[in-house]
Length: 470
RNA sequence: GGUCCCUUCGUCUAGUGGUUAGGACAUCAGGUUCUCAUCCUGAAAACACGGGUUCGACUCCCGUAGGGAUCACCA
Image 1 (cartoon, rainbow, N blue to C red):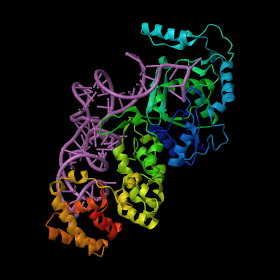
Image 2: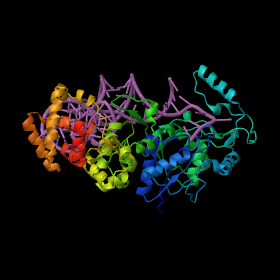
Image 3: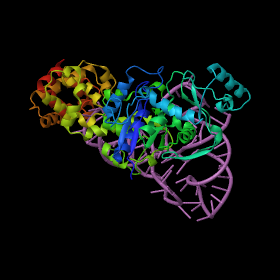
């Protein structure tokens, strides 16, 4: 019998989803999809103090925005629910009871202050602190108000991790840990093991913060008589820009912010997937379907990767270029500048046609205000231009005047404009770099614009002549 | 500090004993009779260090250094 693949993403609702979290979710999703299995979303909301209002909705919205749909979850239900740990307290109690019955769990009699003293004492003796050296004498009954602690069985472990390879540790890392907190909620350490078993999860794909706890989890699996799922540990992602590390704040940028800023979900997916994974070929850009068929945990990098925003921009541009103008139009609804409010569809499509090959993000469209309203003059554009700076104001006025006269008689198609401009080069004796820059700036007052003749043609003769006269 | 993991151009990476160490982003130079954010061409750019093993090490072993993770009634 072939076991169905079931992977899960189990965030705790304490904030937004950043790049590292998304990558973990993406890889778990890919494993499920490529095996035609199920992808489960489970909310690990057992720490009431850290829970952030609205963050569960935010997490689900982020997954949805990226197309990482889940087959089971808090809002969609499923056969193994509920999918919020706070609603599964009875289940944990039941499993805890089996550990109490088998003598593998005990009520922790110490206060936090006492434990702190034990730690300090161990530190002053330069010995590692272990709870298991302080187990209480008798078997005190657990009355539910004390923490319930797991009675570990110290031994060496070696296990396989799909990403990290073969790992091993000695018995000194095995220690007693808390299963149920004094508020009646389980710890992550206990709850995730119970849930993964109950939900029949086959692959645990998670961040490297859990790798050092793994031997203790293996110890608990044994006590619970559960076969551990396949494990895969992801390295962390750090932020970087120009080789310099960014602050924590930048590192933890919300994935929805990227979408808000004009990044396409499929570009984010491709970029994040290749941050620590590749298929061994020289392919740089992957569609979601390609990822589903090509992804493998075994080719995930073991070392951490740094996030390079420039590369993300490039990837995003590649995806934009693959869209037809019509597809692009459908996606840029919110990104037009304010002045475009009343512009008609046909005109906007023409702008996209001209500029689509140069967009890096959809938000770049916001700089195209000059297509819709007369822009404000900005002399810095001229003074900041090496060639234009040298022209005297008189000469500039003269060139603009000549341009105006020439264009007045032009048919104003892109081809005709180009011919007119070429003639103008001869009659004025200026280089293209000077004349064309000048015209471009006087008609758009923007640092960038599509090709000059096309831009002028689209703006129309009346607008161009008006702007040259201002 | 203990434990575990990692280390190829600035960045993401290919590479599993014999390669001119390949690609991509970024950078720089040139081109596309203008800007440039597309596109084309080219350049510069890496095996952390030290020992072994071997006819031969980026590749295997040991050590050093550096980085990461963890050592909670957080996940």
